[in-house]
Amino acid sequence: MNVIVIKVGKRDNLEIKKAIESIFDMFLPKIPVKISQILIKPNLCYYSDYSTGETTDPIVVDSLIDYIREHINTNSQIYVAESDATAMRTKYVFKALGYEKLAKEKHVNLINLSEMPFTEVKLNGYYLKTFKKPTIFDEADLYINLPKIKLHPLTKISCALKNQYGCNPISYKIQYHPHLDEVIADINSVLKPGINIADGIILKKMSGPFYSNILMASKDPVALDSVVAKFANYNPRKVRHIMLSSKVGIGTLNPSIIGEEITVKLRDKNLSYSLARSTKKLIYQVYKNIMNLLLKIDCF
Image 1 (spheres, rainbow, N blue to C red):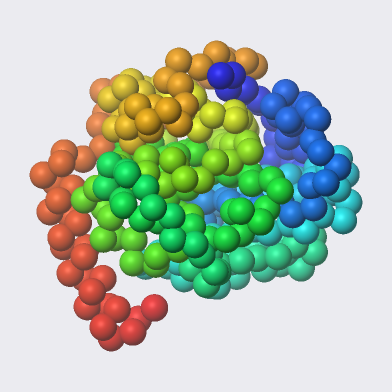
Image 2: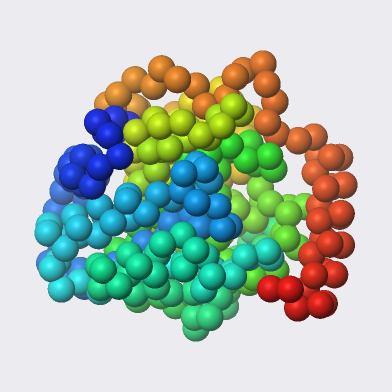
């Protein structure tokens, strides 16, 4: 499977829209006219502004919406989706990160997956035996996974596979952290994006955020994440959720890369950003205790 890497000249709607056009021309050259409902899932996991490199840049979503209106279906219904998390509520994150304004300007719908109807899907996963799949995923004619390229202390990197963890409508997601890699693979065995477009406009290195102005894309989330892992100086086979996902046939660990050569590494090879498993368990337990206390006193 191919992964395309595109360098945009600057953080600009027109530049990004041209890049998105190239992505669609490569991966989805013939889109059926019948497409009327399109679901977009950015990474809005917390209240961090796009400038931090932690959440999907709204200009990428804005440019994608423009492309859809101009090239796919002018009258399509577009949904931008996120779900509640242990320490985040979607209705507040949409407002805080400018998505309410974007939705009004672009006439798109914001939806909270935690408040949507769902169907109980049975699976023989690494950890999950059932998954509450929001029905919007079955109703949408095209599902676009729009993750953020970034480092993550629990999973080493976060991109296409990890972004789908946020499609779990259960808000108390911290309960899955001791089995996070397994749960990510399980969810990806259920949800199948039509395309994955990764936002690398602003990236966060150990030293802080910087403009990289790249987009990566593939129909294969494992292939895409394998390239991102190498970009972060990790062996994809040593990134557990990528390896687990490849083992159940979600995608390939050996993609072909088309486009720009990446010269700047996201992580210095000599610096470790991930945590040892024993440390993860300790942090999880402390965090869980704090969150349980906050939930009891209704802080969210």
